[in-house]
Length: 199
Image 1 (tube, helix red, strand yellow):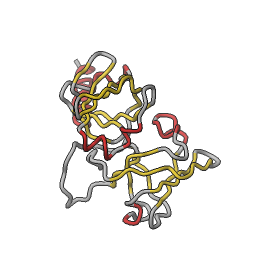
Image 2 (spheres, helix red, strand yellow):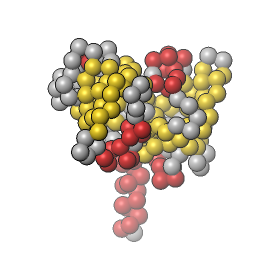
Image 3 (cartoon, rainbow, N blue to C red):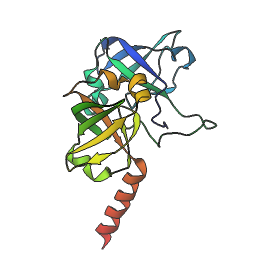
Image 4 (cartoon, rainbow, N blue to C red):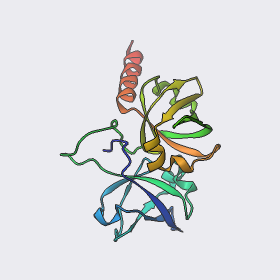
């Protein structure tokens, strides 16, 4: 379980192909605090920490994860968001994030407005029912509020702190971002769908 509050950014130091999938090596300041086997969200995708050292750690990414998330496009030098799993005695912020990405969106526009930055993201049709105006959404693992919504896009306003302390500042128009819709909304919609099939 995660909260969408990014602890640190990391840099992908190496991407190494495996027989199936690939392994990444990530440099980040929180590496020294990781334990072998710990869950870590990388751009919102829950991965397992392997071989943590003083300033870097590794993770394996399977072919299905590479296919349905943006992690398949990682290269040496890519900047990624890092969040460790929420401790049971930790302070809860953001919103409930599982690290199970629902799909990817495409950055359509990046526009500054005074000290803030607006992002417009193209929303896959299959995810549209799960996104609501003023609701929560995780973009590359970051807990954000949907500020504007159309049938095919949503807008989020990024505060200066988030812009400076996440990988959003490295985004370019046309790039893919991982999206995880609000878990509560998904369960509610599923329950409604199931009730409808019984009528």
